[in-house]
Image 1 (spheres, rainbow, N blue to C red):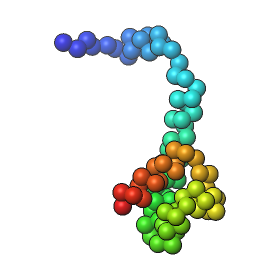
Image 2: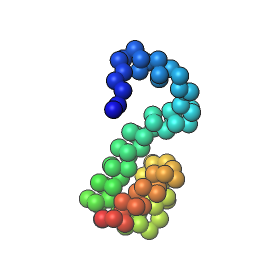
Image 3: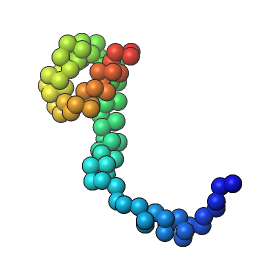
Length: 85
């Protein structure tokens, strides 16, 4: 049987936890922007064949030319999405 806790008890339990590492907090803040950016790049690549060809030929350079920061995680995600489509 699962115990039932009220809000005050849950608050007490949560206060006993250590704070999340700062890197986790920062990543959580950046994730929504990164996802929107990746989605926009992939959508453009689907609509613009020349842009898609440039991304496939040299992803990092194409992103830099378009004003994007070719972050490793972003590059990996875009590369995976372009291969899947």
